[in-house]
Length: 140
Image 1 (tube, rainbow, N blue to C red):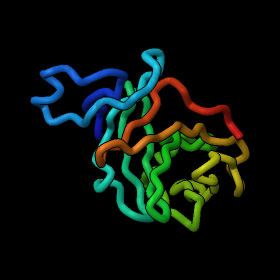
Image 2 (cartoon, rainbow, N blue to C red):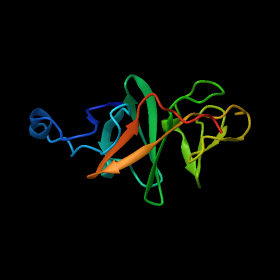
Image 3 (cartoon, helix red, strand yellow):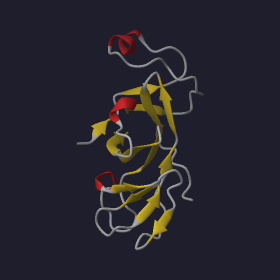
Image 4 (tube, rainbow, N blue to C red):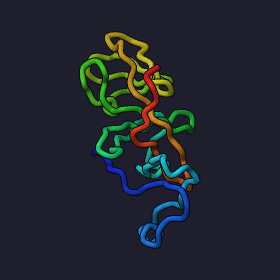
């Protein structure tokens, strides 16, 4: 199941409607940044994955040693869903052809994957995971 974005983490104070919907307090960022609230931090399993959507883009969340990371959820080799893969140390193994990607950097570290996967900046605010939409970091 892919979870879609449920709110925004934006500058300033949340609107009254955001407060009544139980969204987290605003993240103090410039207005030009588009942080999207995608999940509860506790919903991301340790050494596991959680697929989410960030403004229509498939993104996979990971928690490794308590730190949450986000990558694009589609393998660059054969378009498999990485959230269905297996975590091996700090790498995600694609479930289709076992290509490996380093989760923190997105670097392809095991063939047949040769093209890096996009990574996204993540903030955890008030127990909520926020991902910076449309700002995937350049491929390693």
